[in-house]
Image 1: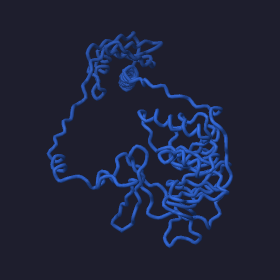
Image 2: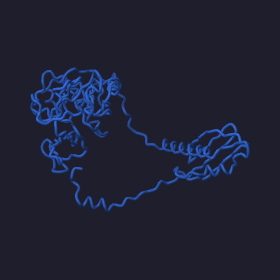
Image 3: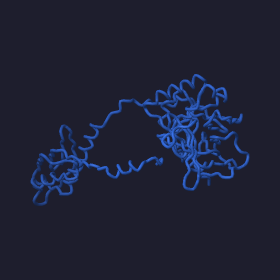
Image 4: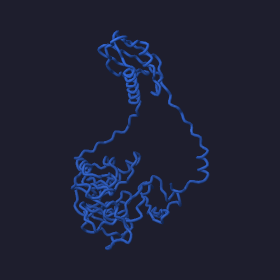
Length: 365
């Protein structure tokens, strides 16, 4: 994908032989009882069993014979099991259609497979902490929000800004000297692995000691790290309708960005925001494109150029991951957006007073 595959790598792929291992069938014992008042089939594998229940009919002539029932119960093909011991007991005067016997056998085997999977499923050793609404501060805002990806590039945030998102990987002691700390919200990385959680917690605690009370998350799972902060949701949380936004409100979010993949009026919420200016993040990569292609450069910035000559900025993110931004900025400053306006600031020193020559309206309709 990054254009770094060598011809040698391709040759190795072509020469690779993939060994397909077939599913191993396990021995299963099946017992069926067919009586006038009830019928059931039990499937047993090792120490795990499952019973499926049904009903028999009263025979008007010759009833269903034991041998026929055993023959039907023995058909385990395609189930992942191989018939071992098969037994059946049938009371006199009962009739069991072939389809009913097959159905009980199938249900018993499917149920047995489910029981085996449940008993052998891996159990997580990590308890996921529960964050309750009362664990979060509630600090909704009304007005313009600025997300500044380069807080040291000299961009002057307007004094009437109500929130300033600063990436965690760019936040330091100087940030609170440059901006009003009561407005700062720490923008968390898009991906936080289990191994990285302790580092994130330490950085958030450091920010809290400096007076920061807000955190902006791009992943719903990250709110478990945000106890004691007011939480705002990024557009990645896919608030594409009013119902979803209401759920975030009930969870205790102080704000949620309406997905830029829908128009602002598609979502009605009192805590909404919507991107009206700036380059949107199109992709997040686990590996550093810059390192793979040319080696790391200062500030870890580069540009990807596609076949149409469109240029997509690539910036370093937390732990040497990358963010790929859109080639064109969104521009909706001349539109009536019903939510708080979100300005995404990358390289800008100031927001242009006129429309850029090239821009995108996104999903505005």
